[in-house]
Each structure stands twice: as C-alpha cells, then as structure tokens.
Amino acid sequence: MKFFIDTANLNDIAEAQALGVLDGVTTNPSLMAKEGISGAENILAHYQKICDLVEGDVSAEVISTDFEGMVKEGEALAALHPQIVVKLPMIADGVKACKYFSDKGIRTNVTLVFSAGQALLAAKAGATYVSPFLGRLDDISTDGLNLIHEIRTIYDNYGFQTQILAASIRNTMHVINCAKLGSDVMTGPLSSITGLLKHPLTDSGLAKFLEDYNKSNQ
Ligand code: G3P
Image (cartoon, rainbow, N blue to C red; front, top):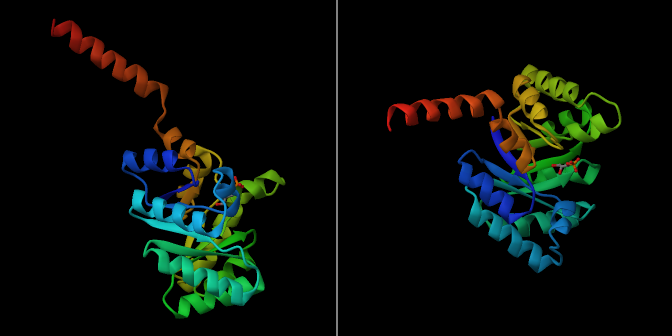
C-alpha cells in the first residue's frame, strides 16, 4: 500500500518524508490556498518545491472545467517535473481529458469520485489513479469504505490497472480499513500516518526495557 500525504505544507511533507514511508503527495486548490499559495507562477514554483522534497508522485490539480483548458493546464503541469500526475475532476470534460492524457502516456488522478460508476468511467478513460473521497461520504452518513470495496471488486473483475487512491482520509482507522479492503494507495494528513505509530503498550514496554537495562548496567 502506498502512503501519500494530502497537503501542500512543506514542513508536513518533509516530516513524512523523513519517516521514510512516504510514496507521494496529493494537493488540491483548497490545500494550496490554505498555505497562502496563489497565482499561476507561485503555484508552479510550489509544485517544484514539493517535487524536490519527495521522490514519489505529486498530484497537481487543474482548475479549468473545460476540455481545452484542462489539456493546456495539464500539459504545463506535466512538463514541470516527471513526478507530476495531472489531477482532473470527475466531470465529462475531465473524463475526456483523462483519456487524452492517458493516450499520450501522461499520468492522471481523477478526483472528486463519490460512486462506483464514476470510478468505472475513470478506469475506462485510462486513469492512473482514481480518488474516492471517503471522509466526505462519511460526513453525509454514507459508508465511504463500502465505496472502496465496490471499486476494488469492479477493478478486479476486469483487471483494470487504475490504482485506487483512497482520499479524504481523516484518521488512522480509515487507513487500516482501506488497507484491509485492498486500496492501492491512501492519502491523508500527516496525523493519519504518524498516528499509526502510537500504542501505549509500546511506550510502557520500551520504558520497562530501558529501566531494566539501566538497573543492570549501573
Ligand atoms: O484528497 C482529497 C482530500 O483533500 C479531501 O479531503 O478532508 O477535504 O475531505 P477532505
């Protein structure tokens, strides 16, 4: 299972990278705005900084909603760095753009996916990644994890190579349940990764080991 961090915050990205378990980064316009990054040039420069920090895939989202605009933006993003994956919204023009980029060998991440049918379309269009939003489905009292299960079943039935990138991950249980269901990737905040470290028995066990070592090595 690949671990992506879902942020545009360079400190969080560096911390996850230093842990040695990071496989990539996902961003979106809201996350860029949260870091105060605006203007096309600044946004491209920020993507470059992210690519310099990590070794894996970096999803960079287009803001156009028409096919021509998405192609223009996506080509500029893809040309910026080989690690860039063009992130496209799950709308008709996004599906067309996904097919266009797929035919050109440019990797894509189809985002804002909330149903199995949308995930099927993304796979048919040759998406590298599909991003079902678990947390936002949970927010409206719908079972986000069930969507991961449905997509896994459909993709396995037909051998689709599109990777399931579980997004809108909010906590460590989302990560663990996505792993159980066979999600290829998860993307979440730093806390969803570092939270996996925590167990009180690890802390108390380590304290006891060190206490016993110190007693017998005085
Ligand atoms: O990757 C998609 C993600 O950024 C959405 O997360 O927490 O805003 O629903 P959230």
